Image (tube, rainbow, N blue to C red; front, side, top):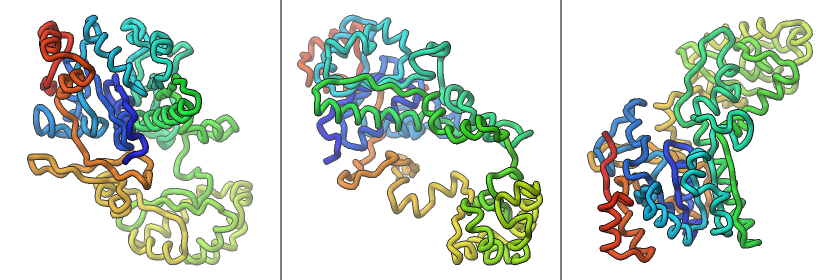
Length: 412
């Protein structure tokens, strides 16, 4: 039994961030009911733009969409219709949590903003993912992780090497961080509700996640360090990237320079002369003599003389922290990730095996549920609403009027 067993989550979401929060809660045992509009979530069609194929125009065939939407129930409501909205309100009488990333203007127009619901459903925990936050000049601006998280947080401009083109990150980085934050906040609010009986509003934004994730960077810049920087301006030469003879890169993480430099110089680099060089003996000496770039270039020449595997053996022997700069194609085969369950494979009906990542924290009493890919839009509409007391004829009438839909293929 998962730790969130018995918690019912309603999810009004599109694209990634709120959907990911729902998926995390589902993996921890919650019953998550995703409520799509009759036409479905726009993101159902986005996989091919990232080179991720859609195998089937329906369930069991859309890995990109499944990545944020596994293990949920699926209903489709037209919230612009009276009956569709009434169905949502009936569901809310049984819900513990509502998760949404709808923009505040749309929520207010539909009458389902937190301010509209808090008196009607006082025990409800209402989780919102925003682009930029509920206040300030950008509060109504559309936000995606590329913009609100990656660009506005400083990551885009200052993480790339100075003088080089900016790097387009992988889609969903900011969404997944913001979703993790929202999930933590929702669970904290549920703990509080267990003591007080009262729900709460939990807000997380893409920009907020970026500010938190990059806080060391802006502290550094605020204190006077120049950003962006190059490889020749690391905090320490022993905490930097290096390229090996075979073209592989790794990160050397000898972060306590004054304690580790002599050991690294002698036992890893094989250069006792560098260990005793007055320009390099302490981090302060490196700074005062302006020798950082020289030192990095000398280390570059040394690391270029052996393959990564050769250097890995040496650094492991001397208990120096390092890690290969892996490609995505290597990560999905990484035994460390596989044996810990960080990554698992799901086999689709067509025989394709696809890697997914589990939720970002392991709860030892919780066995990961069998992965269930996203269903068709509205697949569970009739079943869920009948559980809420609707009669078959009533549902058929609602479907005919367009208030609800059932099993709609939304992939183009």
